[in-house]
Amino acid sequence: MRQIILSLAVVIITSNINTIKAQQSNKDTKINTAPSTKHNSPKIIKGTTSDGKKVLLKSDGTWKYANPLEYEEKQILPESASKALLEFSKISGSVETYIPFDQYQSLLIDFKGCVDQALRDLPDDSLKSELRDAVDRYDKANKIWHFEILTVQDKMDNWGKEASQALTDRFALWNENKLSLERAYKYSKQYEKQ
Image (cartoon, rainbow, N blue to C red):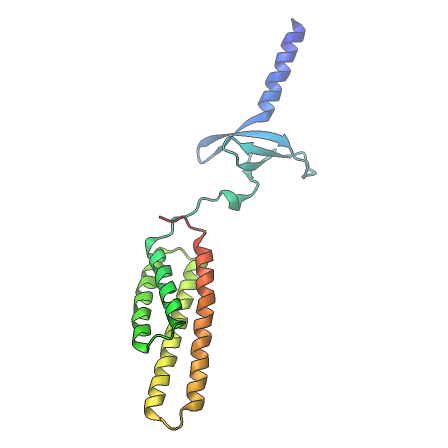
């Protein structure tokens, strides 16, 4: 009888060691644990929550995710940011097709409007910075293009050097924005789509 009671006690203790309740956000989460072989300190135990998330349990009763970035809750991408990315794609693709100046200005106005709203809705992050910088570059390219047009109209015979440099500058800004668009889409992946 004594042997059975001791065996039951060992089973209960082992069971309690292998199942630990941790509390986060006022929610109990069951965590299955196994001693860590990666850590020299016996104070940290690797575990897995009942929903499969890897955690590290500390001897002081606290715990953290083994890979916090993997389990971070994503924010929802504001609809205005989705629209801004769409307009960004439109203007980026359009400048590659050598659209006329008036069409470029129209696309720029649409892009600026969408970005202005997105800047109000987005937190301060990489996507917000990328969109803000893209508008600035497209606006500079617009001013350069406008300068080219004025130069051609004013000095038809002697505009070559100035116009050539302006054209180079405009295309450099557009090329930077093409890369910026790729970065903006990469940054937008940190959000969940609506």
